[in-house]
Structures are given as C-alpha cells and as structure tokens.
Amino acid sequence: MASSFYSNTQHIDFASILAMNDPGMVSMFQALIASGLEGFLGCTAVVYETALVDFFENASVRDEVIISTVAGQLVEISEEWFAETFELPVDGLEDVSEMPKDKIFDARSIVSMTGEPVILSGLKSQMKIHYHLLCDIMAKSISVKAGSFNAITVEKFSLMTAVVCRMKMNWGRVLFGILKKMVTSGTKQAKGFAIQISLLLENVPNLELGESSEFPSSKILTEKTVHRYIAVIDKSGAQDADVAPKATKAPKKCTAAVPADVPVVKRKRTTKKKDSSSKDNLELMAVAQEAVPIQMIEVSTAPDADDTADQPAAVDAFPADRPAEEIESVERVDEQLAVEPAVHVSAEEPAVEVSRVNVDDPKTVIRRVLDQLDFVTEDPVVAKDDRVETWFDRAFDVELATADHEHHDGLW
Image 1 (tube, helix red, strand yellow):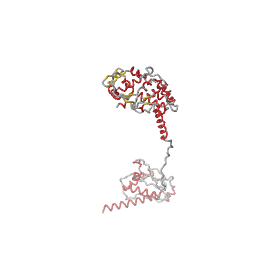
Image 2 (spheres, rainbow, N blue to C red; image 1 turned 45 degrees about the vertical axis):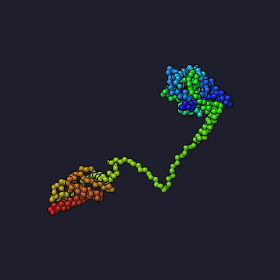
Image 3 (cartoon, rainbow, N blue to C red; image 1 turned 120 degrees about the horizontal axis):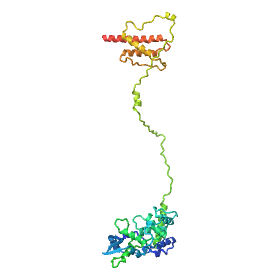
C-alpha cells in the first residue's frame, strides 16, 4: 500500500500557521521559510498511490541519477531537476555532519525548555513546545528515519541547528541524497517523500499516473492541527508529572521478633584435628611413666675405729647354697644403681622405674620392681643400712618362694 510511504509525514500549510497568535510557533515556521524549505514542505498535497508503488519497485541509481519505470514509461530524476522543482537552495553545507560544533552547542541552549543545554541522547521533551514540533518535522518529513521519533539523534539535531541558527545549507543536495538512499536496496532509510515524488511524476510529460488521492488533512499542519498538537503535548506532560513516582525514603530493615522461649541455636565451629593430636587417640594410647632413678645416699665419713669394734660382723648377703646365676644378676643390679646419679624424689609423686636391663629374664624384672616398690613405700627417715637390708631381704624371700613353687610344678 502506498499509504505506508506517508504514514508519518507532516506537511505544512504555511499561510494558515503564520496567522496564529503564538509568537514562538510563528517564529519557528518563519525560520523554516528563511532556510529555503517552504517549497519542499508546503507544496501541493496530492498523492498518486499507484504511481508511487511502481516508482519504488523499479527505481535505482545510475550515475547520480534516479531511474525508474512508472506505468511502462522511463522516468529520470536528477539532482538539478529535484532542487529546481522545490526551489531548494544549492549553496552552503552539503552534509549535516559538517555542522560546526559551536553552532550545535548554541542550538542546544536555544531550544532548551530550562535554559540548560539539551542532551543529544535524551528525549525531545527537553525542548520548548515549538522546537518540539520542529524536531518532529525534521524526523518525519526531512530525514524520514524509521523507528522512534522521541529520541534526539545527532543527525536530527544537526538539521534543527541549520534552521534555528539560520545556517546556509545546500538543501537540494541534502534532500536528493536522502531520496537516493530510499531507492537503494540494503539501506536502512525508510521510504517517504510521497507528496514530493507525486509532484515530480506529475510534471513528467505524457505520463499516465492514474487517479490521485487527497493527502489526509490530519497530517497537514494548520492553525487548527497545531493547536491540537500543543494541547496533546501539554496533556501528556501533565500526565507524566502526575504519574511520576514520588521520592520516598528507603524502608528501614526490620528484624523479625524472636520469642523469648525459643532456644537460640548456636552454630558449632568445626575445626580440623590432626590424627597425632586427636583426643580420642590420646585416650587410647598408653603413656609410659618417666623413669626416675632411685635415690642413692653416699656415706660422707668413715666410722671411727672405736665404733667398728662394737658393730657385729658383716652378714654375708649371699648364702653359700645360692646359685651363681642369681648372685651375678643381683650384683649387676647393684652396679647399675651405683653408676646412676642420685636424684631427689618427691614424697608426693613416687616414681616407678621399669628397668630395660635383662628384659628377657622374668626373674630379674620381678626382682627389680619389688626393689623399687620397697623403696617408695619405706619411711624416708630410716637409715641407709636398715633400708638396704629390708628391700633386699624381701626381694630375696619372694624370689626364693617363686623359684621353689616353679620347681615343685615342674616335678608334678
């Protein structure tokens, strides 16, 4: 349908608008007239839909000339003919990208509603109402870009700057370049210029265009439609202010109340235990008590000659009938005790020593243990001679009884 070629187009009735009682709006349209766009935006609003469909289906660009076939007849549109038809200026800047930056900065402040420079990546609602409308005209009738028309792009604002700052532009080349993009396949340029192309085709000699259709009056900017446009913009602005969310304080974080009778579960700390220091292993391990040598008391003075006369003769510690192996074992124990240094042993912590000498001989081990038990259980005040005789006699008697019992067991 040909209506898609002008669904967003805004045509202008300059005579009606210049009679408005709105200085700002009238000043903006006067700037459009001064820029040389009156013939292009205010031409006769006639549309030949069938011819438009043929034109865009068969159009192409050859040597900077647009060539198409309409109703079986060849049509050629050059840049000179295009500019002459709409009385477009052909002097000045040929590309909107060449717009001076200082002019763009000035235009950002001129069109701003608040006086602060508008943001190019923002929305056109930052602008005054008449420049708001100018932005729509540049987007829909000049650049003819598809998509949203509310955003301010660099290209659209450069076109606005040319009008607002009265910059000289070669509108013939700029607009013809846009038309070439419309008929070039693969470009993102939307198809438009429906009224302007219809006027060009109407001027082609002997071309049958078919029936024409009136351009929708709702899309022509007149005094009536401009007032309606202003009312819609004002209403939408008021609605935006009403629905704008009010600033509220951030809610405070509240912790849930926990009843007093609910027990608090504490998280247990988990630590890695080494196998060597594990409590369970320590409980299962048998710890040997530290061996403490038996205290030896040396006689510092020799007895007087008179004292030795009163003492009885020394009793032989080993009877004549005792085996030589037992006597030798006891002598070895005595020699070991004599060699080990004397250590003071606390009466509160008795020490038990397990000898590692002659571990294979059970008799020797038993005798050694009995000797030490006698030592730790005896009164520490007893004299040396009495203590030695006591533990020796007891050990000797026990060993004799054991040996005799083993001898009888062997006989039976």
